[in-house]
Length: 358
Ligand code: MRU
Image (cartoon, rainbow, N blue to C red; front, side, top):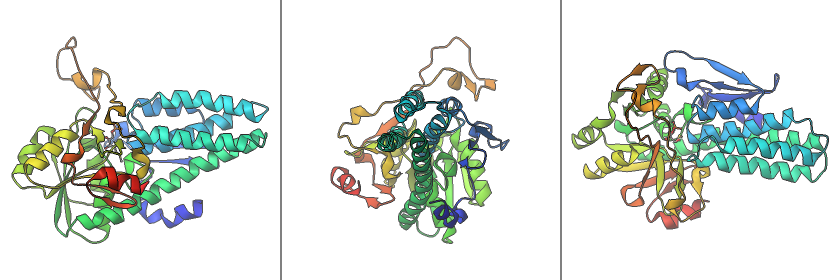
């Protein structure tokens, strides 16, 4: 499994997170400090992993899912239970804490369920050591699969990008949002690696500035040409014909094709449609919830500090204003041209094409 990762090494120029098999620690790049400082943090404590997800040191749906899986591996490692049932109980406690970190990212629940299923399977042996080994192995599998999946998404999606394509994107969907390589930004990266000339227009993505901080950092590292725009310039830029398409990621997609993504994505979709440009959603199938109900998508609301300050640094308004800070919105299928996954490009009606991919 890890040898598979070696094969993917050339796609892992940026390593946002991994499990250190020697020290048995989970390691991650603190994305809150980018683009100014590159600081890796490490822990053996699953509670610290939960904290890092909650405060967005680690963010992006796939990265959250993979990190939570490693969080369970740390919990199993820490468990002092003498029997397999006892390890399962400790794991369940860790699962609850990790599941309570970010409510919208479907990959979080998908990964936690997958690892718990493996743990329950191993527990049948009665051997607590086997549960811990199985849980770590499953987390490593999820990690390697995520990188592999992203490269496959890149290969599939790159067909949508002609030489010279100008792509508008919102939020960060690159290596930093996954175990490596990225989804929507992974498509752009793949096309670039194929030798296509591409140009990115990235929004800043207020309030956490995933565009201004993280896309800028990643795109500069790759040498991919880009322009940074404020969020409110999207409609103008699309209508002016400065982008050929918009391409974004997703935190959760349901079988109807409704796609939740960073707040502001719905505005990007409306602008792209108004300008008669394609609007693509790019995500692994692990982001797809097997539900027909868009109402099942939980929208995270975050704290006031993100809105009344810039990254907690500069205050931009009065302290006592009332704030509403939804972190995600849902784009309906009628505004989406196609959904790209590792299985290929799903076209409308999504209610037919998406279930076939699962
Ligand atoms: O709040 P964030 O930064 O976790 O939001 C991230 C996004 O909205 C991404 O577009 C989505 O998770 C896909 S990441 C490949």
